[in-house]
Length: 243
Image 1 (cartoon, rainbow, N blue to C red):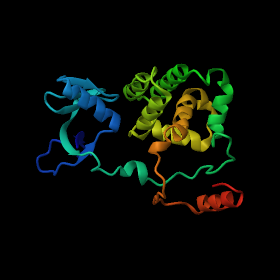
Image 2: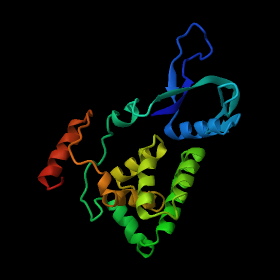
Image 3: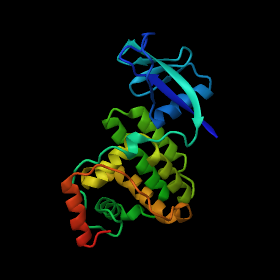
Image 4: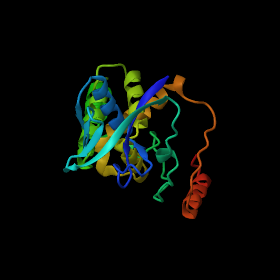
């Protein structure tokens, strides 16, 4: 099975024929947006910061149309590319561990406390999750990406809880602002984002119990460069009973 991957030329001078072209792939969401436009035979498509000219294979900066770069489309095997930018960045040293609640997260526990009256209304939770993603994306200047994520989730508003959970897992594993922001929010227990990211975090958390047949049973190893303070925090957490 193959998939289409779009790249932009990231050379200092993208039009210089003497430079060997260096191609950088678009984010997962931008790639989906561009490919969808390509499949629908559109000549142009809009991203958050750029306009994509599919007729001439050119990327134009919204703030200055004179700043243009070539783009290309290639087909690769679906499991071909390793996502280094997601799995190999050094983790930031923050408050690493905290006491766990019934939801293994103080952040999610706080959201459920505030929204106890809608816990059985999946349509409402999905709507709130989509609205929250769109709101947070707007704050980051990622409106198009956020709308794509939110609208994709809303397509499952009337689906079963299991299908909603599957959608949330897919969206979380996409390369976008969402997983970066959600990870940071959960790691820091940032309660200022409970109302916006809480619904999605709750749905994502519930996937671990609703999608047990898809869970991998085994040991997963990840390499990372850890600061001494982080290692000491982890050792202390183990001594305190954290697993």
